[in-house]
Image (cartoon, rainbow, N blue to C red; front, side, top):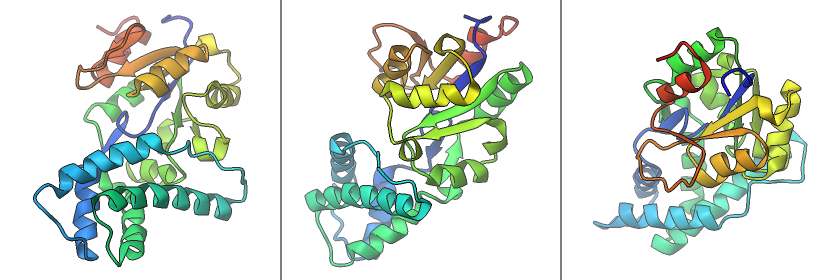
Length: 241
């Protein structure tokens, strides 16, 4: 494997970087400003409702190519999810104003932080001669996030669902990313935190899949599993111990 891999792809959120705090904390913090009635269990209820709404949402795939229309579709997709969350936990009159604000919060790089090892590992891989790419179901806000976090220049390509009209775990989005590097699936590796979208999706598409399981709780039945990105280096660089 070490000698055959030429390109290493990464998922984005919760693989390279994470939200500061939690989604539920950010939702609650901003919702209160616009009239949401907070209770002692509001944050737990928001977290549960978000997990359900996100899981039940259709993939972020839109049949448009115009940049303005694409951004509108992305916004509406997220509006439906967040509206679903507060429909379950308590709607409030100024919800639309709240949504506009919180949508912008997640576009702000200051809302995100790199995992401690991310920059060093990416730099080490580039120094070793690997091409690097991102394959993510994140929307176009990803570009401002990675620029703000200072890692955009480390990647040769970025492939996202809303621009590709397909989403992980579908093989098509992996195929699109591979075409950008003009390589075969056997020459690529994909690293991500989702068993279904990243490990299983990449493996089905013919890539070497690597699951990043920072908690140690994933129930993987096969494939490579690492706890931090540091553990990726010995898999692809022979001299790394």
